[in-house]
Image (cartoon, rainbow, N blue to C red):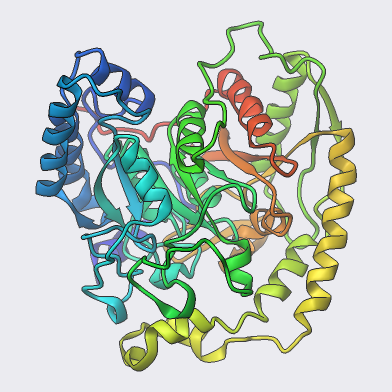
Length: 497
């Protein structure tokens, strides 16, 4: 039995995940938000190399527990740090992420660094060019220190072999490696992908924040495999062919503050998206006094545990206390998860099948089963797309009345390493744990995942802040207020001494 399996067997009789100290606390500047690291470098308080070495050392320290890094760019990152420091002395204007160490999910192309999609089938694959999002982060001064682990082809709600800094349970999936590294302080900013919740769910599992941008907000070029099964990142176009995954999957950031999410959104978007400032001061609603926020306890396909519903209600009460209007809007997500899942099941996955090609024998059992059965359903995808459009119109009407809606991220806090969790007398597993996220994915609208409380075992619980098309700014504004009112990022319990 591997160590992860041994730890899973040592849980209490409840078989529920619980908070447990596993890692020593980080030492400054490790654990600082990205914006603060950048400001310290620009002010001359820290050198770029000093920041990068501290985070690489932290990565080395936590990796024996986490197993969250697929590839570490130690020497290359330090060379880039030296080049950035030299550039700073020339007086060239520094970018908004200058000197910030970041990590990138193993399904996003990074030039000169292996991008293997968590699969032996793509072992040794080294893209020729960066994904658009990676290129823009690097142009802003960020330094990639590692690629993060994900389930094979990013299929799954857990990240096999990777553990959470919160104890012997899963950091979620499929951006589980990213969330674990950011939560542990090894990375100041993570770049992942979200199809049915792959940013929002791991962020909750690990107590950090994530943003799923709305469809079309960011250029997703460089998510592998690319069109036609290309694995070099060199498509040269953001045009997506008409598969379900390519339509709904987006790139997005994982971070420790809302401000970091906003800065990275602006950077990757290559447009004038306002970078959020510090959280509003006590007694200040951040200019949102006229806003009415809707809230819904669940969509109709899966239960939500008492603790998650309580955390949501506490967040709503905090917003009401800050002077915002609040209104329960039951049923606004109903039908979306089922329609989204049914549409996903019609996806033939041509790009992935083309990329795997003759290497099918190297694919793992779970991912191979998915490939062999695609498409799972022979239903008419156009009829399902029409149904989703109808449900989206219903939500747009609701957003006219309540421009932001709060909903749980998941039915429970983090699941066990086996990918299951008890919820209201039932045991949910697999994509049932993403029911709330998948309902929101079907809308194609921006959604922020932000911690607002804990369950009875001490694990983080988050809410989704959902806004209308193109309203990433409003979602972030409400997130800033929640960050002040409810604390935002929740750090794991560090080992004493």
